Image (cartoon, rainbow, N blue to C red):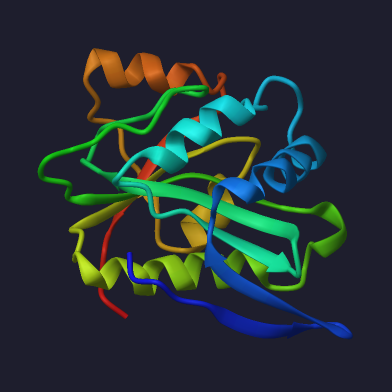
Length: 181
């Protein structure tokens, strides 16, 4: 992923989209805690390992040093699912932009941060031209992702079906072809 920074207005302040970095982990944990129940919380150690993965392409929305939202993502392969609390794996020939986790602080909801993260990551993926994008939809977010063009994908190996079940009974794997903007 190329080095970039994008700044936009947010109320009276400004926010910036940039790569998610190690110093952001404490803020990421605060956003995660505010958004998810204990079943979906992933540890700071897991995120440190993910940020060390060479195929990660995660982004953060920050206001100064405050993390307002994040999108944890990496280069993967169609049908490959990272289980909750699992590390990102390196694929020698990735064909899929995998969106592992996106969260926005509740007090920032409705300000376009999620859409801005998604759009920025989508544009950044042009540098390696994936064929697909994929994610695991949880907590009733299937409709949101369907509006962004994702559809249910059920052809999974037993190993990946088990990884999907680690997210709970309502989790579904969704994909869409990647179309360059």
